[in-house]
Image (tube, rainbow, N blue to C red; front, side, top):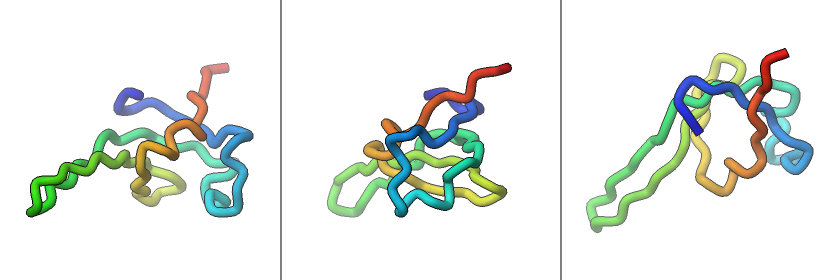
Length: 70
């Protein structure tokens, strides 16, 4: 994934949990890294969807498909 690329929710991501993403375009903003005080680093991913910033974990990435230019 590259910063600035556009994605849509794939047919595999139609679970009700992701309903707010359904039919919308997501702009990839990049990684959102959290360095915890116990030394653990967590890498999340940030998107802009419908004017709102959304943070996901890596398991969500497989549910997105690149938006191909028409």
